Image 1 (cartoon, helix red, strand yellow):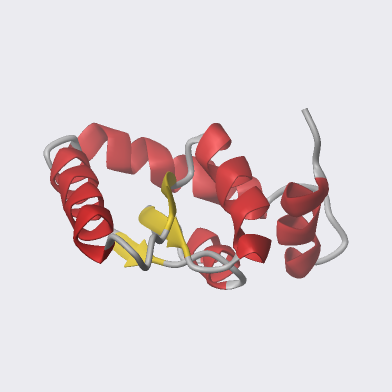
Image 2 (cartoon, rainbow, N blue to C red):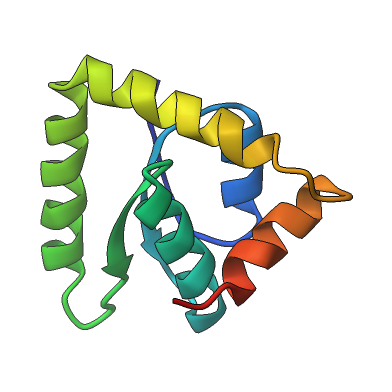
Length: 105
């Protein structure tokens, strides 16, 4: 299974469901969490949606979806990373996403 989604709290739900995703943020507050999960390998973050160039964004998402669907072992790895993200020793599941948003390099 593979999702195509925006960022935000939906990312937490997808990690809980161990659902790899191609993610395109649609708001500035979604970027850091999406980048954090991308760096860990749980999702594939393709950047911010560009309303001025929606066809470019659509083609980029399509390209990455086809790439991931051709790599089933990578999808399994992404599921495993989602599971690891959700089993972090945080006091709550929502704290996991907040921590990803606030982490710095």
